[in-house]
Image (cartoon, rainbow, N blue to C red; front, side):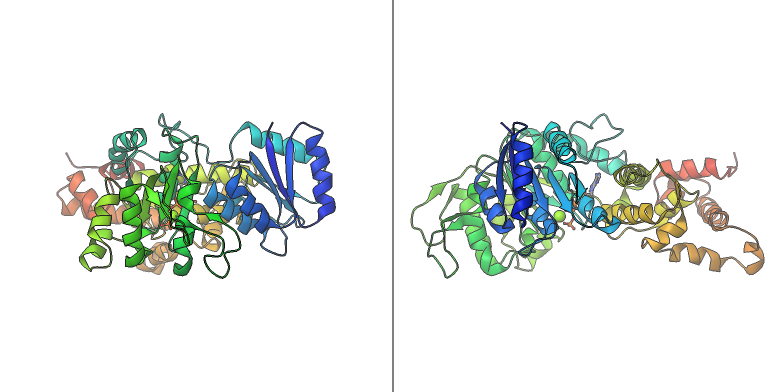
Length: 456
Ligand SMILES: Nc1ncnc2c1ncn2[C@@H]1O[C@H](COP(=O)(O)OP(=O)(O)OP(=O)(O)O)[C@@H](O)[C@H]1O
Ligand SMILES: [Mg+2]
């Protein structure tokens, strides 16, 4: 029987929801305190979580985040009293399965719960790639990503420790999930600890658990993430933030496969696959003496280096289209498309925040767009730095840009830059592409689009 966890500080609502779900054959556990619910979730498996957003202890969004760290794939349905767009957007952004605005009909909730039971909560539907069964999201066609696929396939089939390195927002966490959910441990949990976000004084007990009375706030025996992930995967995020002292302890656990709860003397066996991630250059940290070399080797048995988005030019429009489609669907808008010039502007930009930045800008762009077209102006309000566009304006004299629209100015500008590069490289496209910092494929596409004649 499906197991549903329901959380709301209003006990009357809890009872109404319980009745509704139980009469339809679901097993229901209710909590009015979200923190107690989370403790329960550490020990027990649930199929769906239904939670209020406004609660005194922690709000529903925070609860959602914590749930995701414990078990990535549980669908969470949020109940919100405020049917405002920002609330809904927030909820979806953090990966809620669905949100319902109070007051809602019992049958509406039931329908969503059943839909959530039918598929898991990972809403990142794959599109357009034959690799899609493995890849939640879009992984693209750029040479750098293509080179990764065979590697990823072998990593998914293996059970060794993995180190994922890449700039912030390049998709490290998503890749870690993919490895877990396509490997033989997928039936068990994948638990996350983010060392960048956990107070260092709490890390030891977070990792290894503690015995009742081990320190002032230890009122119960508590399992650490190594025990929670037993049989499954442990994702150690921002591993470079770990203090040298804890690095030593972690190394010992990885070597021996045993942990000791804080305040206990006996060892417990654990069977965990570790995937670690960092956006720092770990080798560099080893050189500086900030990261233990032996731990580095213990983690980097298998290595994945995720390229920054600016080195994946051929994937930018694929990802942009994917996010556009996803967000317009989630916000229940008609299918949307880009104003001319948007994708070109995306390709010119450096994307320091990588895929996360692209995703967030598109999400906000979809919110701001009034019709079915997302314009450069919408994206400007969404935080897309349009300076690159404005520079385009400045470089042309007043006469030149007289009466031209922004996309037209951009096109002129682009044409000039491409012609310069081609002339400089004696019309050898490969060289010109390198000079322009784009792939030969993209250059070729632009040459055709802009109708640039190549001398024979
Ligand atoms: N290939 C992809 N397809 C679709 N969405 C993606 C893809 N890669 C990343 N994303 C999205 O981009 C965002 C950032 O990804 P993720 O959190 O995995 O990055 P990260 O490398 O762990 O970042 P950080 O270093 O900041 O923790 C997430 O919202 C994720 O869903
Ligand atoms: Mg991350």
